Length: 316
Image (cartoon, rainbow, N blue to C red; front, side, top):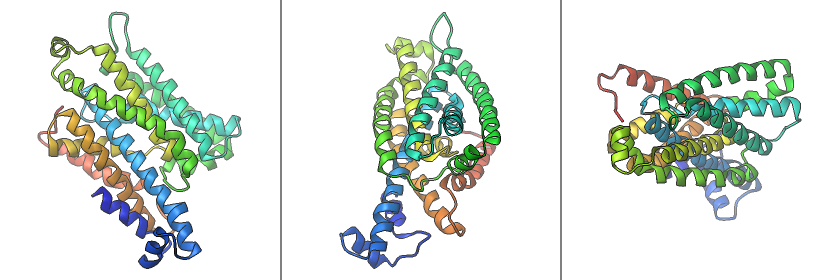
């Protein structure tokens, strides 16, 4: 499905170009317009969509397994709020204007805020408690969202520049943005896959995990770092795209069971497919295009309602 959607993303767009011209551009021929649309606009959007989807899908599966909360998503730990706050401050006070500069601010904000949430959720007697971390993340995220709104309302330039970023778009995400976030994404995926087997034991309870030889503190730190890198990289590329990290792990869990290794692996394919579907639908839904983040909200809201109304929600 991901391959089919990626191919559709090449041939479908707001600028109608005959399929023959698209194919000619892919082979190195074709008109200058087709070459520009394929290689400078649509191909980078496909790569960005795949990267964002992989990051959000795995981060969502990881946060749900880590907190043992089937309705958790990457924003629970304040990642999106921290990234948005740092970007708003950078635009308003540091003169940041380009998406390639947003990347480092978003990643720094995600790292700083997630570290603070982890420390708030920790205690002197042992590792961080997932429930306490969730409460701390929601509280810190609410405070930062208010501060971000205050900064953008008092600085019109920050408001104008963040308006498109907040909607969650893949437009104009060039190689400079993608290359900057690729190492973070790769490290986050490796950490998530390393923690997956241990999370199967954690799902049975802390005592059972310890009896299996799982070091809870090490697994928690690896999970928090992976969530930060994955969600921070995705937010830096496209802004806050909602429901992907919440919805995809649920659907995957219904299909492949509760083994976290399978959930993570399949989420890496299913989530990019959803993001690209939303991006393609947004191109043709309305004149002038609709950001992918808005389309995923339209798709995700009914799914979330269905999850709430299910008699037996998928368990972890």
